[in-house]
Image (cartoon, rainbow, N blue to C red):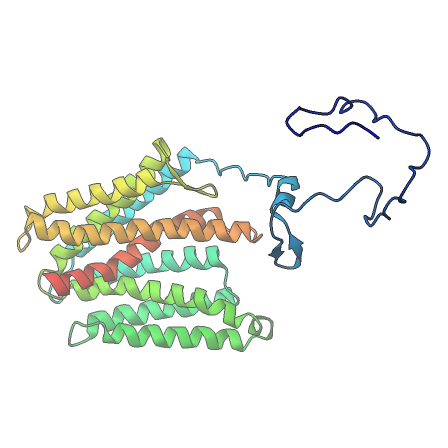
Length: 348
């Protein structure tokens, strides 16, 4: 027999060496049979409950430590010449729309309507080439025809309102979907293309709201304030991205939060300054409508960047270079136009 030791006396003297004893089998009771799957010893105790994993067996928390770490996706670099080019395009587009609004007057809406129609054609070109819906040519032709009908309705209607534009948008959407249904190749993807066709048709009709806005009191002044604020916001946001694109909103999107915030703030400031000189406006009212339209334009431009990054991550091939980068400013002004109309009708 071995001498017994108290648990307080410390470790056993043979902790590092083999325990003395007979080399043969021990006398007395035979050893208990082994129940483990291998001879390496008892299985390790579980450190936690098993967790269910989607599409696979249960998993313990300690198993996650053995997994290899996921590779981090490097952020998309910000190309400064491209950001400066887009900023210049946004500024030119805003100047063209504001100066075109100054040509509108009672009985002289056609010059402004032609300018709007040209911008609508740019919108159709950029968005169809960027989104590439099924039956691209059909969608482009239907959208261009819808733009012409909406502009004519905005100029020729007896009462300046949005009802004729709504009818034109519905007709354009129905014709675009029907044009895809007649093609056997595109019939399978007609459900997927419904969203893209809707965005393009509604976008071209949204520009026609500027013609309607020019026919109501204070409409031309509202166009000047709102589109100037939107143009300044888009330009400043892109310029800031070229200089300091931080903090990055997403690694796959070459945009920074500083540009979005600075663009909206400077656009609002510009509208407040214009409001102190235009008849029918005060700096407060001009700042209010300018804030809404500037923020709307900047966020629409940012959403276009996220959509483009999503298409690239999904594996879709990149489309025409010019169309992709014209899409953001055009989408920003398209969304700012109905926002300007709503602010003018509701608050002015």
